[in-house]
Image 1 (cartoon, rainbow, N blue to C red):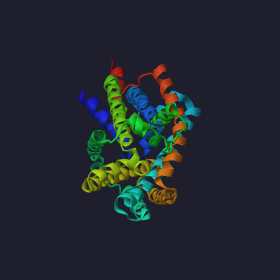
Image 2: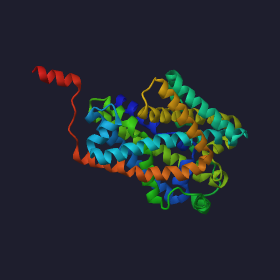
Image 3: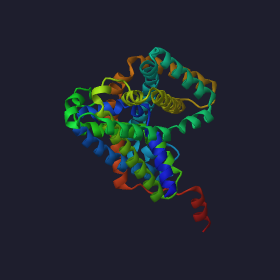
Image 4: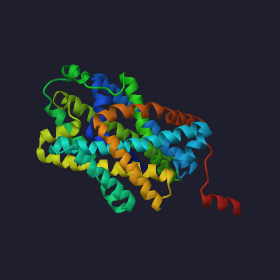
Length: 361
């Protein structure tokens, strides 16, 4: 069970990025539909649990070290190529959103220039990838548990201090911008987008576990845990939507209203999550096209980082509302492939040790 819990925690860490942590995703995908947004969050929880389980089990069964191997193996060359390029687009796009998110933190929390925040983040991401500062990435990755605790604490505070009722806040919630037209489609689109973001690492992570049941249980635990965080974040923002509905980072606004010191603490957590996600996304994107450690790789990273920096000026909120739904719809190819693989049950691949043992008998 410990292995499954550890894998589940890693799954949450892969999916939970700055957009989720800031609350902007949750506001657009769930809270903007009011009470029905709560139903959408429950549906998303069930889908995350099922698809998380499918991803890690698929990785374990196919013993893969690359998402490309697994996707091509279950869906063939045509669909596999489409899904591969969707994942590539997602990696770059999320990197752009992370750089924009850093600008929003500087602007909302400290009143500094958003351009400064985006510039600092873009420079940090480029330098980290070029220098391969793995220790820094590992340290920042350890922030995730603090984020989870912060979400739980802010949700508890918001629910205990809300002035009216959810029915009374319904009309205000529905005034907020929605990423997708209907609540049920919003749930599906949100899950599809996040699965596209986390598919690569989740499949590879599952491939490190030879016991399919442990891997599947890990994905299930991770999906359920992620869903619970979505529900808690939604209820926190919904209960304070009259105050934080116009904020670019609603969860940060809730923290700041509770205590300025807590707001600064939350800002540091968010900045760390943005940095970690941004490095992971743009590193994976660059490594997909150019061999790591070469001069060409470093030049490519600078070009990609500069392009992401320029595109980040579209704005954090606008990028979430424009880019995320597009990837969510495209990600349905991946979701379909996963469901097909779960029904088809691809042949279990043997480990190298198992192959040697069978050849010797």
